[in-house]
Length: 99
Image (cartoon, rainbow, N blue to C red; front, side, top):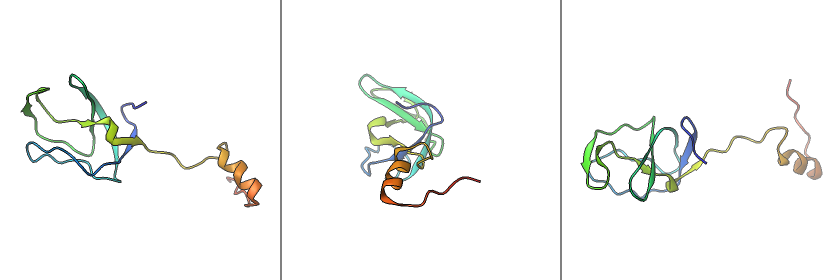
């Protein structure tokens, strides 16, 4: 579902902070730079936030990651091939053609 380089949107404002880490902000867009995993959670690190590594009991000495459940993929604007085009036709909305 997620891949490196993908744009994602943060969907939570609640983070467990251990060492004054910078955390994602709800509603902001981020770019996945890498994945990390502890025993139960798949996490991501994003290009826009880099924290210093610290010792964590569950993942050892490394930079913190953020649980992927707190993000959703960024949706691109509808294109001419999306279902929205057909909904617009039915609603009588003029179709804007690309030049």
